[in-house]
Image 1 (spheres, rainbow, N blue to C red):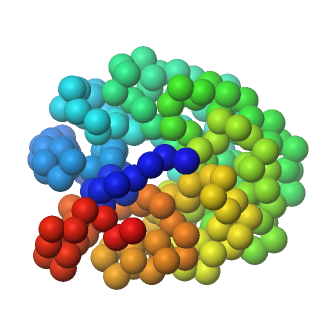
Image 2 (cartoon, rainbow, N blue to C red; image 1 turned 30 degrees about the horizontal axis):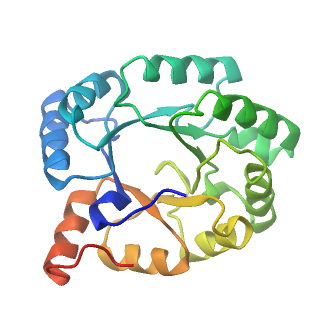
Length: 232
């Protein structure tokens, strides 16, 4: 499990809205670097700019594969992973979107084969798997997590892309936590807008967060808890 000792290191600061401009992305990258977040995510074609800005720091340039529905073939997802890693050693995180259609179809062997293969490409970087809980029932969430528990190179179960049918709930996190315990990390993404939400999610077992509001949430934290490094 990843060791976290600063609140800022709980956030993958994310700008993935369709209308994000280059100028907006550049300002976002600079502001996120100033906050010393865990990772920074912007539209894929601009990730080389993140790589340059975080070089020499402990901030990761985080990329995605199969975003946002996981429909791509396994080899297409593998290609996306390899292309991201070619950007440089600053790319230390890859978030893989599992095939939602396969999960909803009960094709769990396909789900396991695909994620086993893709996570095997990421032995030296952090691998997060997005299961998009907004489309799954409790049994499906538990099934996905039980499979991910068997895969040694999966580091985090991630709740969503931010493009699902609803925001992640505390109950979603509790369901995941019951299955993964302390063996896998939990990343909450999708509707994380405030410090109070983060506090509730952490109480339920979440470890890190993906949010377009990370800068504002970090500001809330420093104002509410001056001099405090982290919430736990």
